[in-house]
Image: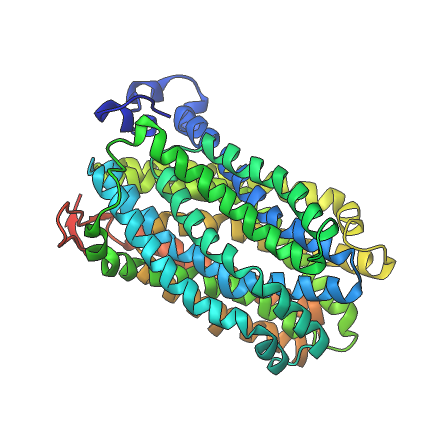
Length: 484
């Protein structure tokens, strides 16, 4: 991470590698050790940051759940609905900055990073207004989706107090991408762990020391997310290293909203299509015989997959940043080389994770449930989880490469086809027609993930690695025009 002002302050250490080092040692014949080390040092802070932001809303649910069974059910339903309809969308929309800021940084068009960030924040405001209306009337929507009316009402109340936090979460994702694409990651850990630590105290105080009670839990989430936004915002404004990438607020950003949208919308669709597929599995499980056991089992598998993916997320971010920076700098071969290193690291990481799961699946299942029936059922699902996690790790890296290259408009069709024309139909057929129940649902998911992985591999193999047009004028376009 660079320090100081001027042009020297914004150079990426990942772009300044000594190629002579590749001949040293047998290990370099297997993997570029320097590249691997830099990617690991990049990925670890990203993992910690992601985990911290995952736990902020979860802590609120834990506090709300101790107020009673209705509050537990309502807060859990609200948190799931918030993730499906809001948080996933915000993460996806911010993906446009992985392309624009990443390649802009590599191309040394430093001032454009701040312009793109502001344009993305404008998009965030627009979509926050739309989603806020949905959340405000979510009790009605959830009742129409055949949820228990009392639980739906409790969830609706919870979501109303999450609305201020939705805007903060969107801004947060944009600032994270702005910093990530400049290889600034260590401050992200501080600006996520500190709000998480404060969040525990804030939630306890609002729930137990004020008259808010149940409403205090989601309000605490909103407050803690805004604390993180303020911390990151002040860091960007005050640190000298951002003198060239942040020149202050400008109306020029209005001219780049459409540019961002052309990448943000397919990027959001990429994330949401995959996220919704997992939620559909839980809903399908609820329609099966012995639905309580089946739903709990599938939900445990979904949560396990999500937690495992948090580990892979750091390398996915590293792949996106390395590829976008190198393409922006005009080094497509180096971008491909960086991707190869990330894939090798991912395979190693996947082996470690699935090995740990295979050995400790009973212990892990026991953290979710005390029921011997569910623990035994989870043990039988473990081989399928091993397969799905392995595919998910690899596709996560390839999705990061797609974001770095600006291929979201192509990858979204891969996600649509593999999950909704292959994975979900097979899941329904095996789960209901062939009565494989939870195993059938998960086999369908594996089929979707496997074909998605193959599709993304073919995309990276046969699509030209080009950089997008990056201009410092208001006529900047996100159309690929130049082979590099």
